[in-house]
Image (tube, rainbow, N blue to C red; front, top):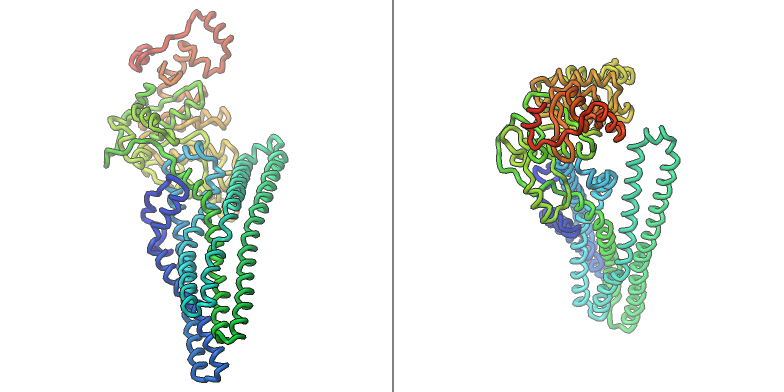
Length: 616
């Protein structure tokens, strides 16, 4: 896999049983790149290993006054220099390729999971943690995957050099061969503590990132209540905790580095002392001593890879664990069984009895906003996301699926279900870019951007964008919207998100509190605009505002997970106390007084939608 071939057509199905298993899966899927890096690494390392031999030959040739052997040694040094340069260049090239392609694979997996889960992702994992995984953690995971091949090449080179020295000059070679395992493994007792401190640092850094993300997201609210200094103080304390954890982690890695400098230094001093003694006694040649000393010195370079791989694993393991936490989230145990079907018809939820007839504007009233959000997600085929055990999966399998016409949304591919039923939650997100980019999305083509903006009453938004963009000749469609629309008010963001949903023009559109952030005059016009633009298309709006409810063709009251009343808004106000309590915000005392005054008791819950509609 080359960088120019990115992105992957299919990043694969990752092993998310644990962080180490995920790292192993990544390395296995880059086997060709790992083999290339290993080959170039061996060429580079063995080229370096050959230098001591040629240097020793050159020194001995000078001592023996042999011009021929000196010229041969010089030629070999030139050849080895070329081999080292080529090996190092290609090793760096393949290593960077492995790093980038591994990081790209993880990013694609995270992007695919985010697209699959949608808004359900941030209900299970904090937004700050998702940001940390998709940025810094991705780089650390790629670092470990890339470092594997270089470590393997270094370890192989060390074994080859030790064996070669043992045969070349047993008196000194065995000394070096026996010392190398000690040097390589001396830091192992320190690694568990260094890993724990690295984990602590990463955990605190993730919390600080999450706090910063949440603070920036709520900056407008914080300014309104004067809470900037409070949250700034919290972030300052969190960042200081990260700094202290980083210092403690750095101390351990500094100790590991010191050990890897001290022990090789002791080896080299011992080697020179003992070798000089042997050379003085005439038991070895000076050239042989130079060869062994040079080899031992150059072996310190591949030894550094042991420290690097330990550090890379220590930092990548918690990063991989966080990535696994996101990638292991599932929607449900069901899989699509029907392909190539474009569903249409009434939108029906058997679990609650909610029916949204095809081509009508249905408003749904729930006393519990959380229940309304969950029901909206169900209508779109967005099953609750989580790490389910077997009992949860069995319960999920027993829950009837939402039907669009005669087709269950759980039985068709996720892409087809989302194309048929679009859900806009109560807190929609605007991505950065121009207004034209915002509305340039997959759609039926039957609803223009102008019509959608008009229906959502975005005239004042367009005027504000035109004034904010003098460089674009006052064209609001070419004006750039900041991240998450932070430069706009809550009502303006809500109406732009509504316009985006209307442009899509799905078979069924589900809106969760689409007018909660606008004033009453604008809300009435927005409700009329939705009803007009979506005439003949299925629309469901979860709301409790009388202005929007009055514009709907029918209103459904959901109480404690079941439909208990269906009818027109004004009729339900007169006949259904539970509906009136939610819509008019009556207290229990006011509801009791109204019932006594009107002589109307609470209407008992109906057992079927048909009975409710007949009563209405």
